[in-house]
Length: 254
Image 1 (tube, rainbow, N blue to C red):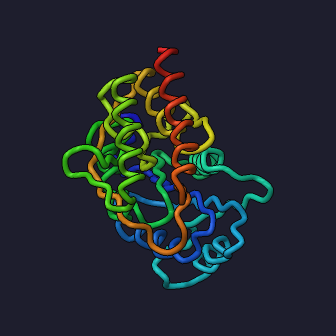
Image 2 (cartoon, rainbow, N blue to C red):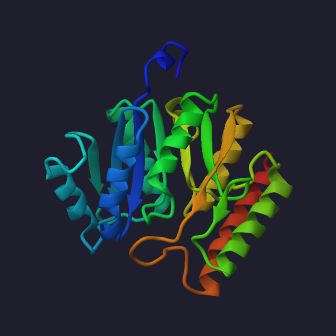
């Protein structure tokens, strides 16, 4: 945003990629809109969830007096396409190209990232001088209460490895809780398969000269539904291997 743009509050869009989050999505959307500190819209990108997540979003869009102003919610239903990174990018493109967003945030849809914390990230970009704000579990004031000991340890180890290989300017490279200016997102598009996209995005943004600030947040236990992080040690190792490979590739290409 230019200095002229900063005289008015930016239009912020929060992108929510969803897969079977029917019991969480309504409360999350209303919470985000209720805590917003700038004009705010929500874009839900649903991968044709069989539990009816998309139907729940459409119902909220029709409900009068539910706390969601008319036009504040958009829904993308994806049929025959799956994947976290492509869902995020689809939502980002809609927010910037069609809705005119100045600032885009994104987060998980399982209530592990609290709606009130979105406003803190937005404030760090709008008034705090950041081009990108990252919700961080691994700086003072942050914590991970949402995952078991095994998942926390794997996340901590991956982030320590990333810091050693890529630099300590970021402590939570795998956050997935982001706010960024539209010009950043036009220049640095997301790529990757799963959560490793976040490492890649942050590193390339820093290399491009953008200012990245971390904001502490506490990751909470998910609301309803089942975790998509993984249920077994093998799940963690398979996904962790992608993170490690991304860190290694980025360190070699610096």
